[in-house]
Length: 249
Image 1 (cartoon, rainbow, N blue to C red):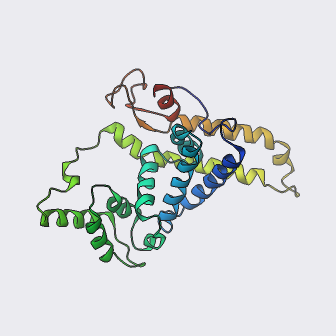
Image 2 (cartoon, one colour; image 1 turned 135 degrees about the horizontal axis):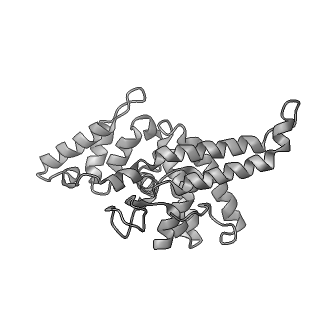
Image 3 (spheres, helix red, strand yellow; image 1 turned 30 degrees about the vertical axis):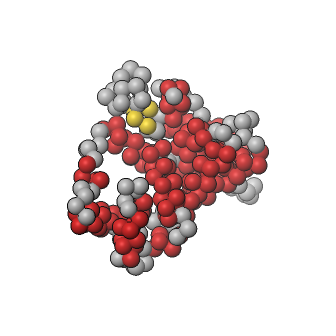
């Protein structure tokens, strides 16, 4: 697969927006560690980063940026944006809905009336609604209206689709590298840190090299050429990373 850094180049984004993106990346990484307690806030921040890039006409770079800087796959990022569009002004719902339940209820095929009823029946802070409750609630409402629930129409996910779904697991490695780099940059010059500080630049280069390698191993999308059936273009993986996706689009 092609190797390339996945961060957004500062030569194509105004400095003010670049600084905003850097701040958002830091916030997203921090919030992502405690996503359950602040899930809707996390979704809002992902949407804000998308909007910054869209404003500069570089929306196509969002997939690479969110994967490389935050360890979040394309499909997951757009689910977060979907949640932000529906529940963005209701941050308190993070206490009553699990992240997966929020995603289920935010899907565009869920009627607003059904969503409203589900929220009225939602749990409390000490017992938040889980995804299965949301799915069952949606099915029950659809059945009452003689409509087959959208989830029943969906086909089983392919291995390539599952790979993209599981990309956040690898993203945690990227988050850890970013955190290590942040700590290293701020390491104070006190007795005992001399040896590390003397080699700080070298260690930072190693960290960024590792981050780049991990970044190329994060599934960003099902291969556009073979549709997940595996081909030479995607290295017989069925999926492509953000750099290869950009080359193929």
